[in-house]
Image 1: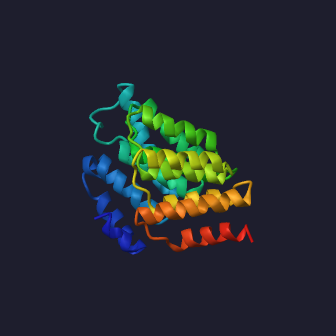
Image 2: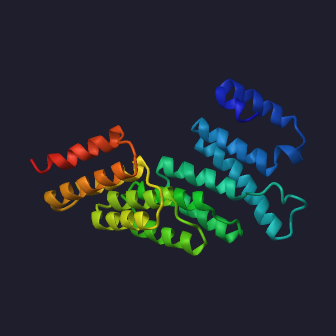
Length: 239
C-alpha cells in the first residue's frame, strides 16, 4: 500500500491516515517503517525518513538496555540501513552514511553487499571530493566480511578512484575485476574510459581507451552515450 502511495503526494497522505488507524504493533513494525522511509525518500523528504529511523533507533537502544517490552520487530534491520545509506549517497551526505554504518555495527545489524556499494558511492560523491582512501578501506572490509565483489562493488570503487584522479588505481581495480571473471557493464567500461581521460599522458590514455574498447567488443557490451562521449573525449587529446 505504501508502494502504491508513491503515485502521488495525495495518495501518500491518505495512506498515512490509514496507518494512524492501524494497531501500533503493525504501524510501528520494521517492515512498515522501512516502507515508510522509502516512500518519504521517494518524495525527497530526507528529514521525515530520518525521523522514522530515529524512532526505530530509540527502540533498539531501549531494547539493548532492557527498558523496552516486545519491540524486537520494530527496530532497524539491514534493509533500513541500506535504504538510508543509498539515500545519503544520492544526497551527498557521506558523513551520515558513515554514521549509519557505525550504528549498524554497534547494534549488531549485518551489512550486505548493498551496504558497501552505498558506502563507497557516498564516499566517492563526498562534497569535499572523493574520499578514495576510505572507499578502498571499505572495499577491503566488505571482502573481510565475506562479501563476494560483483560488478557494482568493483565499479563504485573505480568511480571513487577516477573522481580522485588516480587512473592507475582505477586501472588496477579494472584488471582485478577482469581477472576475477566478474561481468563488466557499460558503466564499468565508462568508468575505465574516464580513467583514460585523467591519465597524465595523452598517448597512454588513448592506448588504454582502445584496449577497453576491445574488451567491450569481446564481451559483447554495447557502448552507450556515456561511453561514446568518454571515448571521443580521450581520443581528442591525441589530436
